[in-house]
Length: 253
Image (cartoon, rainbow, N blue to C red):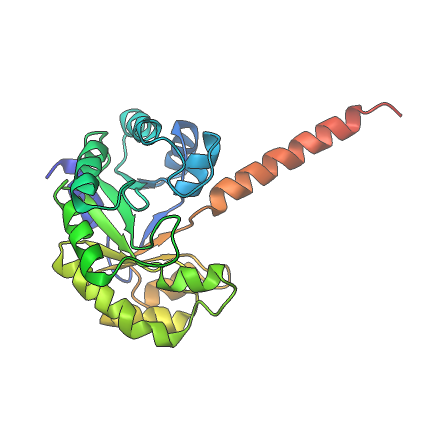
């Protein structure tokens, strides 16, 4: 285990969460590092959009690897990368892709259980096999369940407590497969977050809900907080607004 991987592992402390303000290229990585970050995390949406591709494994895999490599080489902090669904379905190809990602210098990755571009989630046993394939790379594997996020995207209640039994079954299976943390994007109810943290065999990662303070998430037992596509969207909105003011002022009367 290399030094950055060890440092990254030690940063996952329930009650004292690792803060990962998501980045998408070397420039954004340097900006977040300069602000005091202890580790870096790409978001799949921002990284893809910054290179002219939609989210959902639409960026060419070799370009994805090159982006990760450039960040890891040029910013001296532990880097975790959003690996989406591994850019493959079968475990053998996922394992190969994870090894390629580890060779970029990334020390961790997010790995999700939804069928990328498909209608649902991989069955638990199949996803556990896929998680085990990624674990072989030696990276810190942040096993993500899309149970709650799928509800949110569909316009339904992402804090649906009826999803809790399956979420915990998935957490247990992914832990057994060797995953290192459990990611629950979409959940925003602090009581549900606390219950998941209490029941999960793995440290829990959430995307920060707008209405919940970091201190409350820490008190709930969260070990890792990320921001997903929000930093990319905020940066692009600010750039557009600044440019709009410039061009508005220069229009002929």
